[in-house]
Length: 260
Length: 295
Image (tube, rainbow over all chains, first blue to last red):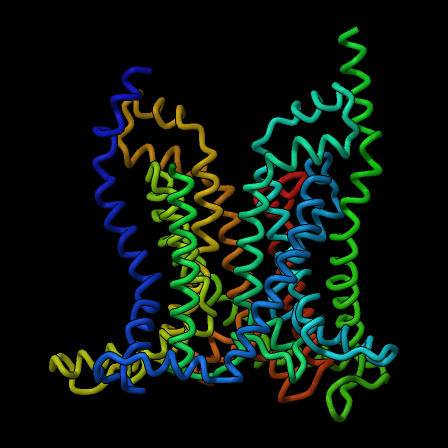
C-alpha cells in the first residue's frame, strides 16, 4: 500500500507526452472558437484585421430577427429541458429499480437513430396529424421533438449516478416505515440532485444546439438561433461570443464552488 | 425475525413498488412511442407509396422506391457515407482516448478539464462549422497568413473536399468519444494498474495490456455515439464539402425539401436505419441485458 502511495510521481514518465497531446487536442477544440471571438471585435467584415470595434455587438442587439430567434432558442431549450429532465429522471429511477427490456430498447433506438431520420419522421408524423386536427408547425412541435430526443441523455446520466448509489438506503427508509414514494422523495431524490443537474445541463446543451431536427419541424415563424443565419457573419460571431463567455463563466464559478 | 423482515422487504421491492415504477416509466414510454415509434412506422409505410405533386404522398402502393435503392449511384453514396463515418470514428478514437486518459489523471482539475471539452458545444455547431470555413477557405485565415509569409503562391485548396468534411466531423463529435471513455476510465479499479506496475510492467505496457482492454466498454459506446451521427450528417458535408461530397444524409434531406420525393426519401432513411440497426445489434447483445455501455 505504501509503495502505491509513493509511486505516482515516479510511475508515469509518459505523463508529459500525454499532457502535450492533450494540449494539442484542446487547441484543436478551442482554436476555431477563439478565432471567431477575436474576429467578433474586428472593425472589418472581412478576414483582414482593421482594429478593435464593438460595432457587431451593437448590431446584434439591434437585429430584431436575431434577438427573436435567440429568444425562441431559449424558450425551446428551457421548456424541453424541464420536461425531458422530469420524464428522464423518473424513467431512470424506474429502470434502476428493475431493468425493462422494452424501455431500454426504445431508449437505445432513440439514441442510435440518425438525426436526419428523426427529423423527417417527425415531419411526416406532424403532417399526417394535420390532416385530422387543426394543429400547425410551430415552437410547440419543436419543443415536443426536443423533449423526445433529449430524454435518453437524461436517463443515461441519471442512471449512471443512481448506479453509484447504495440501494440499501432506500430499503432502510422503507424498513423504518416510509412508503416507496417517501423513500424516493426524501432519500433518493436529494442524493440524486447533482446527477439531475448534470443531466439537465446536457439536455439544455443538446437542445440549444440542434439544427437538423429543428429545421424539419419548425414553422415559418419559429426560427431558432442555429437557423437564424446562414454564413459566417460577424454579428453571429458576436452573439456566439456572448453565449460562450456567459456559459464559460457559469461553469468556472460552479467548479470553484465545488472545489471548496 | 431479521431474516423474515428482509424477505418481506425483498418481496415489497419486487411487487410493492411496481405501481410507482409503472407510473414513472409512463411519460418516457409515451414520448418514445408517440414521437419515435409511430413516426417511424409512418415513414416505413411511406416507402411503399407514390410521391405527391407538392411533396407528401398519394395512396398508390408500389415497390418502386425500394427498387431505386439498388441503383449503383445510391449504393455508392451509402458506401461512401460509411467510409467517411468509419474514418471519422477512428480519428476520434485516436484523439479522444489520450485526452480522456489525461483528464482521468488530472486529479482536482478533472471537472474543469471535462468542462473544457464540452464548452465548444455551447455555440451552435453551425457557428463552429462557419468558424472552420473562415479558417480554411481560399481567402481564409490560414491561406492569407501563408500567402503573406510567402510560403505559398497559390491558396491551398483546404475547403470543399473530403478532408474538410472529415475535419468538421471529427471536430464536432470528438466530445462524444471523450465523455464515455472518461467515464469507464474513472470507474476502473486502480489497484489493477498498481498490481501490473508492481509486477514489473512499464507504463506503456500497463496502458496497452491493462488500461486499453478495460476501457473497451467506453470505447465501444464512444464509437457508436460518433459513428451514428457521422453516418447521418448532412450539414457538415454540405458546408465543408461544398456540393461535391454527397453523403446519404444530404440525399435524404434533399428528398424531403427540394426534390419533394417523400417516398424515396423514406426508403433511403429506412435503408440507413436498417444498416444502423444491423451494426448495433451485435453490440447490444454483447452488452448483455440492460444495454450495458450505452444505458
